[in-house]
Image 1: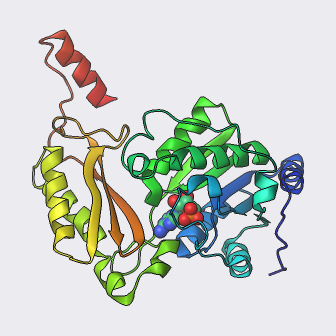
Image 2: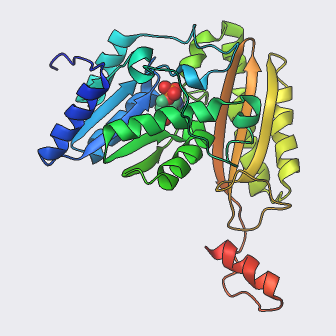
Length: 310
Ligand code: AMP
């Protein structure tokens, strides 16, 4: 493979993608914070399969880290990242410095209401404003493209989809399946922080999600009871402190009074192992016969049935 030279200035990055489109090529964009692993590589490979040229961005975004979080110690490995990106099919790497991305005081930010108030948003105040702002900037720099994000960060994907749609970016946002270790642990750059003992305990997060899915398959429809079943699996691991375990409607991240057959449910967990915070999630469809021809009894019943079928 030819050596890939990372671009560092916004002007060079924008010009490179403009030139690709001018030559008739479609662009795939894979935003990352570096410390790339097989999960990131899978996004790059998918982008390379669906687009003519793939640009990987590597930027540890200070705006999305809270005080006391791991911005300073977040793993940085640019040379290895460039090699992994190229190997997976990237033709362009953009690795700006903080001064390239934020040359002045940050007075303009992007806030997505609603979706950002719960779960990670509640645990990490300001986090999603930082994410939405940096991704909006990357979309503005990149121009028309398909942008690939991991379902691993499910709420982030939902926030970015909504931001791109509301702000009319010419970007198709695409969600990609989570890549896992053989024992179920979702790949994450933060797994590198785990002590050997914590690493052995960590698969309990994925096990909890699997158990939540089984409980739903077994007929449980009350979100709080599914959540309690997941929490119990995590509680069996003393090394893990649960932050949240929830079962919510996949589209809204809100728990309804009860799930109904055919509902798309998302199970999400966040937990701390020592000083390391990990998140994971899983999708599950509620089993059972889906009512196809609703009995028109009352207007509200009709409206409910229409929503379920949508
Ligand atoms: P990060 O650099 O960790 O912020 O992640 C960059 C992108 O890679 C995000 O869209 C993540 O959702 C995605 N990603 C991270 N871990 C995984 C994984 N294990 N499987 C698939 N995608 C992932």
